[in-house]
Amino acid sequence: MWSRHLIRFSNNRWMSTSVATNVKNIMGWWDHVLPAPKDPITSVTEAFLSDPSPLKLNLGVGAYRDDEGKPVTLECVRRAAESISGCEFLESTKATTKSKFVQDSVKLAYGNDSNVVREGRFAGVPALSGTGACRLFAQFQRRFYPDSQIFLPTPTWSNHHDIWRDSQVCTSTYHYYDPDTKGLQFQALMNDIKNAPDRSFFLLHPCAHNPTGVDPNYEQWKEISHICKIKNHFPFFDMAYQGIASGDLERDATAIRIFLEDGHLLGCAQSFSKNMGLYGHRVGCVSIVSRDENQATAIKSQLQQIVRAMYSSSPVHGPLLVSAILNDADLKALWEEEVKVMVDRLIRMRITLRQNLEELNSSASWEHITKQVGMFYFSGLSPKEVDQLQRDFHIYMTNDGRIRGDKQQCGLLGKCNP
Image (spheres, rainbow, N blue to C red):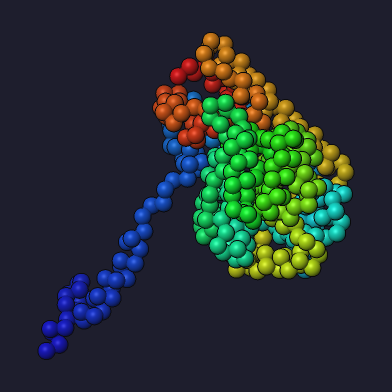
């Protein structure tokens, strides 16, 4: 009788049909999981690394590199590391360290003399670089405005869509880059802001727009701030490149300062990956400007609760480095000097690339190369042309034609003549 409920399993062992069914179910737990789509940026590096050619060139990664393609450690960071080498990373010092780091970061973004800073009208927490800062704000938005959406520029950093999607926040887009003029679609952008539902969230790049390198000018930022104020929109700034647009840290914060002067409440994600070369340290900050100090205290407690459930606590070594640089007059001056050196080199690379392309007597205009700013040059190359550069010349970049402009060989791209 028992034999009717037994089946042969393996090695002549027997088990009941119910147990066999459970084994089958357990073995099938993750059979429905398919490979995720490749990230458009990291996949470039993967393809580059698998290419055996000794002449290959990777223009896709976003961190600043030297002429040999190696990450650069700034001298100010080396000295800051020496200054904190004797610090004891104790539990009791974590809160003080992180609070100081947030204060220093906010001053850098909003201004030392900002009313927001003086009155304590901001809530902020350390984040895992700019990506983590955006994710924390997206989770905060989802928690307190679950039916809201956020408007992203077209195009924007590809990870923006993933961050808000995985936070279950709906995304919409607004006009930004004009592929015909290779400049800003300002009027269309203004119309989109005007026509969006009142009290919408808008993500803005305050400087060195990624991926296009096209930024609004001062007067345009004033108009954008004005219409956002009329519509009572909430602006969220993703500032990953402060200093990298113009070489001037204060100038690159102009957009945020304009919005603050106009009385906006706003949010800001900061990253020190590029402007301090701390990519591997994942140092960032998210802050939200509030109505008053009491509201700031409440917002900070909610951000801390999100952090607690997500990854509990952020590291302290990176924030210590940043604070050491920002609070030492000599180190900060050295940092500002090194940022200017990086930006000047980026500008030289743009000039060289434009000259080489124009020497080919191309019928196309390459003026946009030197008009764009920041880490990247938005070439306007089509996906087909990008594929040809990769296939025939072993030159790698993202599919939208975004090129990292800090590589010496970038200036020689015009010689490829694909």
